[in-house]
Structures are given as structure tokens and as C-alpha cells.
Image (tube, rainbow, N blue to C red; front, side, top):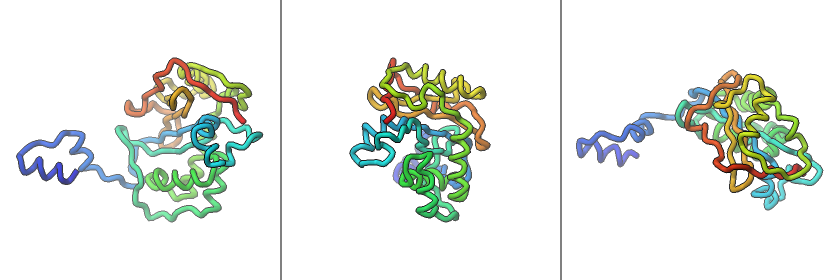
Amino acid sequence: MKTLQAACLTLGLAMPAAAAADVARTDVAGEFDYYVLALSWSPAWCAATGDARDAEQCDAGRKIDFVVHGLWPQYEQGWPSDCATSERDPSRRDSQAMADVMGSGGLAWYQWQKHGRCSGLSARAYYQAIRDAAAVVPIPPFFDALDRDVSVPPAVIEDAFIEANADLARDGITVTCRGEALQEVRICLTRDLEPRDCAPDVRRDCSRGSVLMEAVR
């Protein structure tokens, strides 16, 4: 990007607006506009990735449906990542303690490194924010311990979450897919963890007519 900036100055050209914005913006811990709470459908992750890793959350009998993939600070356009922070990294014990909501301590640690450091919170406060965010977004009863494979339109998944969360609006939730399978439900929250509309760059739903939700294990 510096090379592009120098070339434009040498030639007397104006930089494209998006490129100029990237040059000007430096991600700073604590400076962001809202959060995205990403809820991953565990059976789909297990089929695509977790089984090959022999991940504990994929063991039969665990009955895990949605897990928190992350709580991501966002700008109104784009998002910060890998911010410098004076906060100490979490201990292995603190990260492992997040396995009940995130599936594994390894994921919790990774999310702290990439996203949590940008929150401006301490590691423990960020982990607590993840728990608090998950607590304010109830999982619709239909998805709780789903005992059979089903194919449903993404809009129906959104409807179920909206029905279970009175303050959640259509523009505050998006459903993503990987191939034919449900990947994630992403819900936008204020910094105070109240539902809000997602910015346009987040509001990109899966374009499939239906997505596969594999039964929980």
C-alpha cells in the first residue's frame, strides 16, 4: 500500500478512496462501533474440520448444537484485527474454561488474539463479554439437540431466531453457509450487547434456497 501511495504522489494522481481509507486507518484497541456474535453450527464444523482433528466437541453423545465462534468488534465498514494492546494474554486455564460455550480453549485463545485484543477489554473481561453476548441471544428450541438432518431455507433460520429474540430485527441477523451446509448465524450487537442492525458489509446471507443442518451428535 505504501508503494501505491508513493506512486500516486509521484504521478500526481489521487488514490482511490478505498485505498486511501486503508492507508489512513490504523486499528486501535477499543476503537470500534459494534460487535458481531458468530454462532457456529457444531455438526457442520465437525463434518468439515473437527472430525479430522479428533476434536472433543465432536464426540458422540455431547449433544452440541450452536457454539460461539467469536465476538468480533466491527466498524460501520470493515473490522479491526490483531490490534496491539497493553492487556495481558489470558492464561491457558482461562481459555480452556471457555470450552463450554466455544467448543475448545484453543478457539477461545485464537479469538482473543485476532479479535479480543481489539475490544479494549482485558482477556477475562472479553471472555465474560462472550458469555454475556451468548446469554442475551437464546437459541430457538427447534435447534436444541436436533435429532435428525433437516434442510431449511436460511430465512426460516432467521425467523426462528427473531421469534426467540424479541428485540432482534431482520437486518440484525445473517445466515452463512459452506457448500450446502449451514455454517453460522451472525447477530449484530451494540457495544452494550443490545441487538442492532448490521452494517451493509455484514448483511450478506447465504444465497442457497435451503441449507443442511446435520443432526447433533
